[in-house]
Length: 70
Image (cartoon, rainbow, N blue to C red; front, side):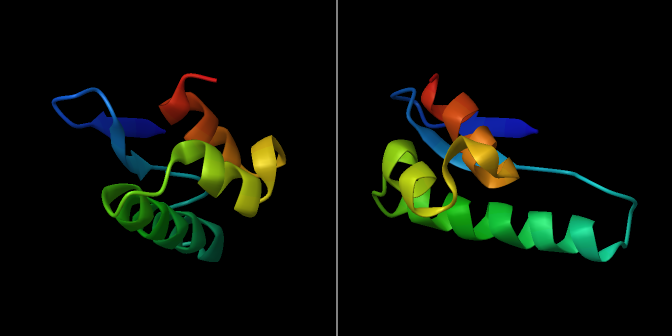
């Protein structure tokens, strides 16, 4: 997992690679990462996204927790 931050230090992109290359799991995680990144870039906070996307029990929630520094 990789987190990209803007100059102000706010998370704007997350990248998650999970599963074998070309697998359905990997494609789903890549798509989820893109969608979460777009929402971060449009003003949603990592905390708000975590709350709405399964909390810390989901892979995307865990990535957002890292992005937020939680």
